[in-house]
Amino acid sequence: MVKHSNASFWNDPKKRAIFFQALLLLAVGAFATLLIINTQSNLAKQNIASGFGFLTQEAGFEISESMIDYWADDTYKLALWVGILNTLKVALIGNVLAIILGVFLGIMRLSSHWLLSKLSQVFIEVMRNTPLLLQLFFWYAILTEIFPSVKEAYEPLPNVFLSQRGLVFPVFAEHIAWPWVKASFFIGIAGCLGLHFWNKRRKMRTGIAYKLGPIMGGVFVLIPLVTWLLLGAPTVVDWPELGGFNFNGGMTITPEFVALVLGLVLYTAAFNAEIVRAGIQSVSKGQWEAARSLGLSQPQALRFVILPQSLRVIIPPMTSQILNLIKNSSLAVGIGYPDFVSVANTTMNQTGQAIEAVVLIMLVYLFFSLSTSLFMNFYNKKTQLITRGAN
View (tube, rainbow, N blue to C red):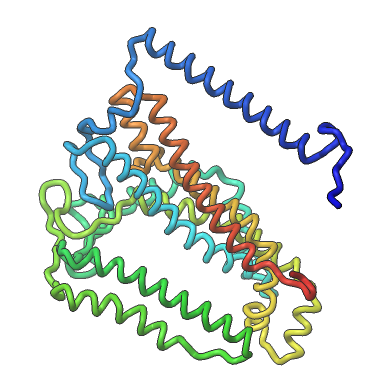
């Protein structure tokens, strides 16, 4: 016999919640529609064109750093794409280094060695309590003042030059093989990670683990090597040469990029260090004692017992710091690094499409933030402790 609920609509919490959520959604949609209509009306009164048609127009400005081929006669769309890639490069390199340095400093902060602990504490307090933009100005000034002009550049190694324009060094000349070799490196990394997780699951299931270090090293090296050999094994080198007021050829790591990454890494690592310290201290002292009673050294106890348990405390606030570094990278405009915000600002000034440029900035950073949060939430669930009897 089917039981029918006698509860009215308003007495049902689920139905009432759905109603109010739908009502709120309608209100937000109505407000957004009114805002769009009002904006379009004001733009029409001032004879300002709207839309994203400007993306196909010629940009007409140079970008000092680019991961892809770009020239001034390319479109705004390609220019903005260059900015996105530059921001992504800073975010990836910066977060990896900030996490590594933060873990190291957090462990130093808990060291029984007085000098190491105090050095870590001083570093953390100074970096956390100094504005990030001021730190970026400081590092940029240091990098551009301590090195000589281009014509008087240092040559610490043959054909490697260090000057106010950055570090210039030889690289392999462009060839169809190199993009595939780079892609094969990522395939090798994915293969190593797959072997690692397979071995970890096998150990949990059987208690036996293979020593996969040599195999993983072979996978990481052999896949790019075979790709390079199959595509002709190019060896032509692009040597840097001084021409006029700058170097031609080779690859350049600019002071703007170094100052930005250095500032972001040191600033974010200070916060990460405190997160790691708090996570380690959240694990009871009994876990340390149990690990030592099993014959584990202190580094082994930290690696195999303490850190895995502290991840459930570390990961959520660490996710916030990862997102902060991505958003803080927009301060690159202050020192002249061409990140997405800088390129978007130039585009806005040349085209007058302020609303569209701001919308693009919001969408790009929203995508970076949501994708990062999605990955970190997935990883956080994988690291949560599973108690006995849990489903």
